[in-house]
Image (cartoon, rainbow, N blue to C red; front, side, top):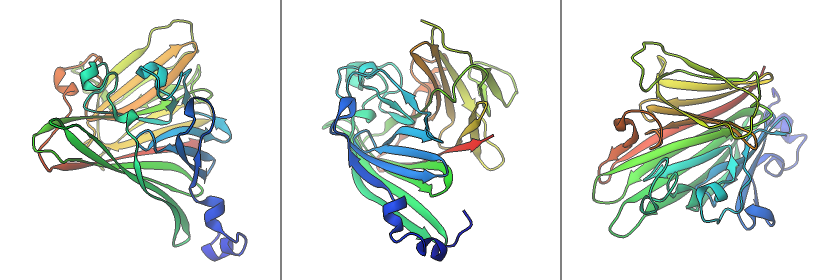
Length: 320
């Protein structure tokens, strides 16, 4: 959009009501009673933020189609990861476990998806002639005599631009060094995911001695009971320090950008099973525990008492 702020204000009496974050609460089905914040008008992209799930990204629409993973879940409060995982565009895995884990470690993919956020900001504002949207909040995973980790998350977007950015500041507020296992489980589904699409990344396989700096897999149509694939990759940065992984469909490219200094590992999860058809693009401080790769890639980032680190992940949708 090339209109100036004053051009737009001449045509819309209250821009924040038309374009700003919209806070709602689900009242029915598996999401009942969950707080939600809708980000709309992002150049064909709309995303729901989930404050009761670590300020993750839920339902994503692209040009009117649902393109985030939709799972056959029982309830967000069910007894197991598989029954309570609602899918969505981004699920945070961690902070003390990623992949298969014992109950004491939080179970499959840890406890982050069970942690509600304290929302500190949900607003739209002008920055020159650009209208920016921001949602921010804090989360804590801790227990007496155990770890005490906090995350300050900021989600940023701009009206008319099909990009959403998630930035985290992870801090060890305890008094012992602890490994932080953090993985951004970015989930895409049909109609972007289908036969003829492919996923590629600036990365190399964990177990490979190859000097190749790119990786690619073609995707197939769903098949009943087809086993899932989990590829453990080492992310490779460009000259700017960023790495990228992309889903290429017939109509759209979805790009995931992140800095390898913060998130050196990339997991690509492919489920081509009928009824559980999904692609996960997953940068992280580690690989899942069940991925095939060296053990040092599964230990996470050791964080000293009082130490913090920052991550930034950008998800962009581009029409072909």
